[in-house]
Length: 450
Image (cartoon, rainbow, N blue to C red; front, side, top):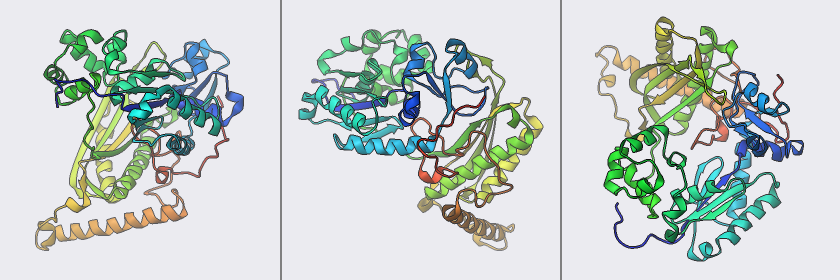
């Protein structure tokens, strides 16, 4: 893994990162919003924070995470719209088609970030290629939907380059530019350096990029506590390494709760709907799960930006035989909710359900005891599980043909903020099957009503 001899490679990666994507998407679809400060929020509620803000809002001091009230103290005429995740996913797919007319997309890292591999001839005309991609996007969409592009020997360096001159920027970092091209960057601003990792680095005497650069690969591995440290070292020094393919380890969803949803009855409804959505994803992936974790967050305090940081946490985990049916997941959830009623000491602001302990369907071993009628009713239990699997598959099929709300476990419920199980998260772009409501038209801006 360590590259201790020879030069780093040439410029082989392009990283494209859209600027304020959710807010820019809303400005693209609604020309009246262009040039104006816009904040995108998850709920039509005063007690929520911005998940994205436009460049006009950023220029006037509003940051992502700021509450509506905090943002309005800085910009009284700021406009707020509710996020429309299905619209953003459709736009993302159209964007990929346009980029592909200029350069093949190698990896999609998130809803607004892609990686392309570069040939030597393409890297030699880097700025021209970047301008061609930007021109193609502007011609297909609008001038407001801009991106920043970085080119470098590795994906890590290309991402750093893309973030250097936002918005609508471009930078190429060559091997011979290192490490001087990085010297003025705060180590906390480097991709992959979280607050916790920064604390570890500082404890090891690493407080800036120059001292980070002088680490040996094995030192980096020791600080990170895993092979990720060496991967980071190689990427930073311009030595490209492909990451091994990742395996899906969990399916889950979480939801911030408006104030009128912070009571036991509605918390149960929310948790049930989240579990249903996660269960459908387990079946679509042709996998089984052996664990379910129910978590709540609450309490907290306001940060300088006005956002709330939770400091109260409660979590409970159930284990069960490999399962893919909603009945098994709901039984586990019910046990967790009963435990929460007895022991949860705060009103939750957020609920999370994670189904994990994944096993591919092809790797599931038959339960020897379930096939033996005389052993503790195991055969009956196995038969019941098989029937519930048929029921779950039938419900999935009916939902696909008649609509996501055609059948539910228990009374139907409308989640706060909508988009049950289909919100865009870091590194995850929902499938069309994840969306639980009728498609929202691109031009139907959902303005905050408060």
